[in-house]
Length: 112
Length: 115
Image (cartoon, rainbow over the protein chains, first blue to last red):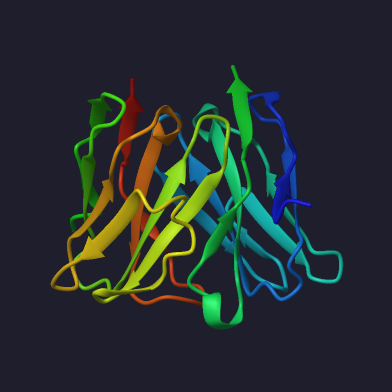
């Protein structure tokens, strides 16, 4: 089982749609969780951290379920500019807590 | 302020040649990381530096890969005797410290093509 698995995508949605991405991780001792965004041929950039209680940033809502080892990202009222690859990212705990493990990403295209 | 910079942005080389990739982290960031992103693959961790020391080199795929960091700042990733399977985007990231919710800031990457 891969350490971080995501919906394979691609997702093609119209502007204004709500879209949800799911991610599972295999290491139950994982410490911190993130969603990164990567535009085509660009570097990944942090979109948001994911906290145990769930958190929201504008149109973006992230949820974490530690019992199920599951992370989600919800995008409401999607914009053309949301088109990108969304990377689910997990940080190890303990002695290797510097290491981020990335999912392969889910490609989102928002269409006019 | 200035972000992470990498050079060159693109490198085309012939199989068997050596290449050096450079990373300038954000000033004051003590932690530095190298990742590799191959076509259709997720980012793959290569090596981590805390200051000038590399406590974790476990991600380096073979002994042809090495990296160093000097002055707690600039890092160089060297690939000797390049192979076609080394073709990928090599990304460098830095963070203020490691662990927790410290954000890793990525550079634009070096796209390496081995012919």
